[in-house]
Length: 160
Image 1 (spheres, one colour):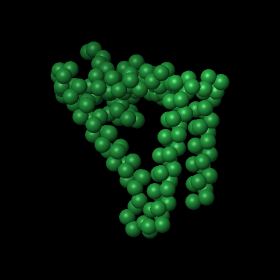
Image 2 (cartoon, rainbow, N blue to C red):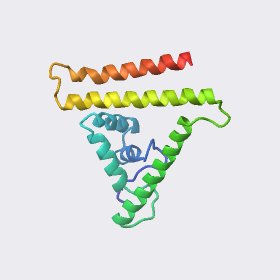
Image 3 (cartoon, one colour):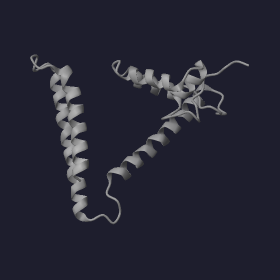
Image 4 (cartoon, helix red, strand yellow):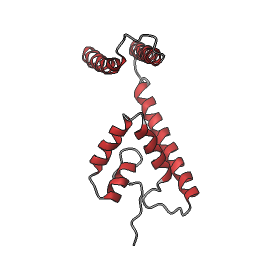
């Protein structure tokens, strides 16, 4: 019996691509995941490859027979996963029922601050790509921003 490549239903973090590849090549799934994460830093190639594989590789135990049916089934699963993730993010960000208005204002302030922070970061990187400040070392900006955001999250969590 020939061995086929499937997305794993049991060993999965998102869509089972790394788990399926690990089973197919008989390697540790963690190793495949590490390689996938490293490929993300190769100009986003890892993200693109993961999405293409998630669409093209059939799910383990799937009964579809044609590539067209496989792609349709996979896109439906990706859509359902994205909707579920969206609802989880929405419930995490929105104020819980019974919360006081003061807490709700605090939550809105945090979201507004995060929005402004993302706009500033996006603007900084846009200016870097336009090469308006050639004397500025843009390769240092991203790590410093990540560290600053991490520190901000730690200290605001401890204070609140």
